Amino acid sequence: MESLAHKEYVQNAIDYIKREFGVSDSQIAADLGDASMLPPKSIDGFRADIYVNTPSLIIIGEAKTDNDINNNHTLAQFASYVKEARVYDKKRHIVMSGSMAAYPSIRNFIRRFRKRNDVPGITFHTVDPFKKGEVLK
Image (cartoon, rainbow, N blue to C red):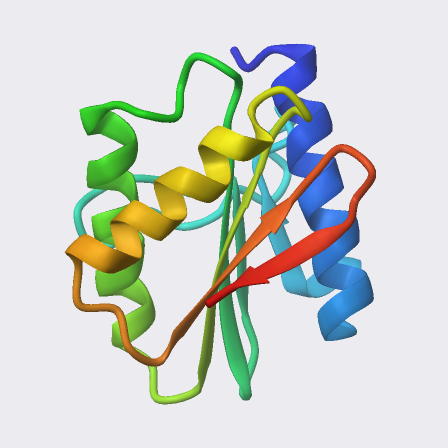
């Protein structure tokens, strides 16, 4: 069972994705605790919090609470999401959201992950609690 904070971070990412990419609710599979439209499991068996797969793009989103960022589980999740995104020949995005306190850690995690892994062709985004997004280059 996910915490209320986690659900809020998932919703923040969904709102960002809808605004930035113009996708509709019906195109978004998200784990908001009701199991109505769960995202599929990725190649290595992880289930992202958010999954969008349209003819032109794939978006994989993950919400993180403050103590669940810099660990082996999150590294394995992101490696799996990169593998999943690479299956598709279209625009590929990975989005990570969390609290304002965790935002610097999220930014640093993504920067380190990109530096240590071969991830060309995948755009990484961060989303803060004000639903502002940042594309990390």
